[in-house]
Image (cartoon, rainbow, N blue to C red):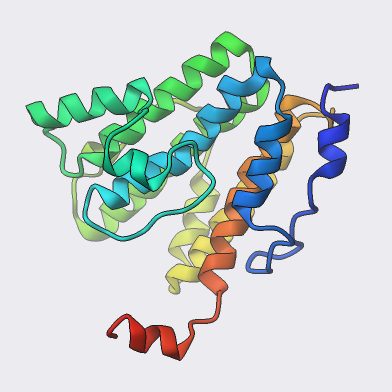
Length: 240
């Protein structure tokens, strides 16, 4: 039996369908996880949460007022460049020298993925070693598909190419056939959830299962935000 029997029993069940409301906010659940993660797994767990911080950095650095709770860094940490992980410091230095890519934040994600994968190798974390290459290759296949549709050079937008041997031919055909972008996103996240279940392993109380749960939580939380009703008074208040 894995090391996280008590924690796994504490965690709230995830929704059945994308878009359903979580029983606890993502930040609340991640707070519970932070209090119960064993010291030997802290660096791996925090590395997974840094994906939230990378997304927040990408938005704030472009002047957008978007911040998702649940990561390692606070909004103030990001705005004041405080307590940043090494790969983010390296990206800032590289950005100041000049990053010759159409979208410079692809380089940030590249640095993050490399950091997370190398840490998983050192920790021998089967979940990350199995899932992360698949996610990277899915991202690159989507870039290639959209590049063909828009006539742009897709190769300059890919990150860590040929990281996985997975075949995404059928998935890309399904995405291409969906004219509604939101339906395409829902299909992709449904496939992500299936693969996360595949990668979590047979022990529901292992660190692999905990990390898979967090990845699933992030997806359900995103769809909760997407499907949240937009209040008219909020529209007026924001000057819409």
